[in-house]
Length: 281
Image: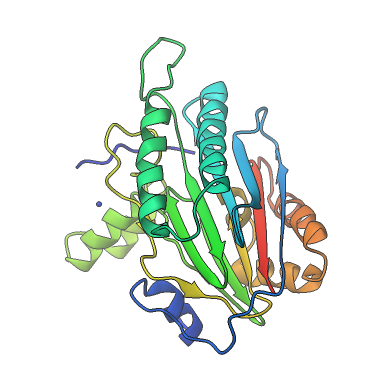
């Protein structure tokens, strides 16, 4: 994964609801019957595993999941992702469910960004490595998320799948140039830097992060999928949905086979692939 320093920040009705962070979707019934979680990682063809994940049960009815994808050299990326994932897991495991969860997540992201930025490189300098972050929190039937970088969060409901995060890549700036008429779509699509990250944990100043201020209200049977880019660069949304539908009654098996499907579909070299699945009953 390539990181590019920041210069100085969808179809169905279901998808539109996900993407509007100012809308709280009201659904009938709010009793949480049961939640489960599962996760899995595949090293792909890489020499090192730079993905780090975590999931668990917090206080009250809180359930959380975290996926981090490290960058900045082999051991450096591994250390960055593990530092970030461990810090998030520890903080979410003790979070008061009555707190301002979006505020808690954003403050935590800035604190962890400073931790990762302070990690020394082999030359002793700071800011030499980084990591993406995708974190989701279920509190009752309310879902909150936060993301930095290009690890993604999907919500799967019956026959629909929607990505609720955006990739913090140089393509965002290229698309803006296209909209303003300063760059052609063809040149934007051909730019070799379009997938380079412009925001990640480990920056001197973290200015671009996405989160939902108002909760998304979960429906019975919803599945939340967090993943590193190794999954969606190999499998389309429809392919991910088909795998989840096939194994949705066994979340452990679903988490196990998703990275394997991604590995089998990718020709040649394949990145680390990690997934965390959370299900609301």
